[in-house]
Length: 424
Image (cartoon, helix red, strand yellow):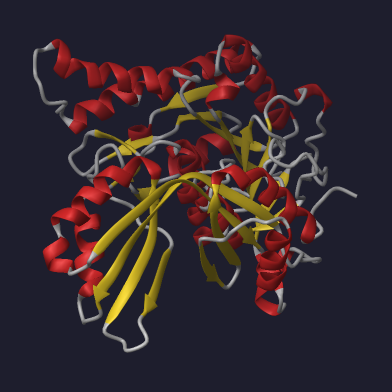
């Protein structure tokens, strides 16, 4: 008998028909003898609707500033998951499955006090474990917990994935199954490269890089949590026919297992190609090369909550000045430029230049640690297609390349092919 945590996202529970389809998946696992807990998101579009209501309140009240109490914001937006949990528990009960819904505070799932973007501090799984051992299915509202002020606190967008992994760690689950609208993790976005193929397994570290570099299958914090606690995580489709799936011990469902590197027998040099659109580049020309200049540049940007990504620095021949180039999200370009213009005297640059409409394409693979020439292959392949590289950053298991957005599809397909990731 296995102990499973199953997580279903917003598209999987978008309406009552889909909620009953989810209930059939859960019933299948329970009928196979597994102890089951389920974590659910709000129905598709519901969180956006709730957030919109909160944001409209200052306007309705006549206030010019969009200010509201973050604790009340959490009280409103957390209700979406609570509705889904109750409806799924009702659906399971109608199918003869013993089930009850849980809100985050009832577990309790404790968080810090950062309402709207709280981080999980502790999860007490003892009560849920005792009920699972008696055959009851726990249906848990994701995305939420209880803060130090004894108020509901939400984990930020995509937080239901994090809830599921944290719960799996707390109840010592054998596996955390993330059900979504795709049937696993692919070597790249199939919409960008039709030759992409589904991976049977991917290492935690690779998945963490893929998620942080633009892959949308899993939320970054959930992968990080799974890696820290060693929770095997399985990505699979909620739209497969529940009655056609074998859930018996030893059966191999369709999907992608995210696991320790040691569990992958045949590790590819490159595992996947990720991309992130809407990047912008800022260059500061002829900056005085002196101690503290980097802090003078990036300190004000951090205070303005501008996320800086790729950074490239070129020092002049005599070492007196330097050029600094870095990327920010396209949506933050104007704000970042204004911040830097306001700090021109402190930084000491001569010219500021910026460009939008860029994209970051990344090559990811644990095998890169022990293989030479991976970067050279990427550069040669892109050069052969006439694609100009604006900036490059690397780590042990990734290479990120900044290019013009017009070349994104060509670049992704070229790199996907050059590393042998296309379907056989």
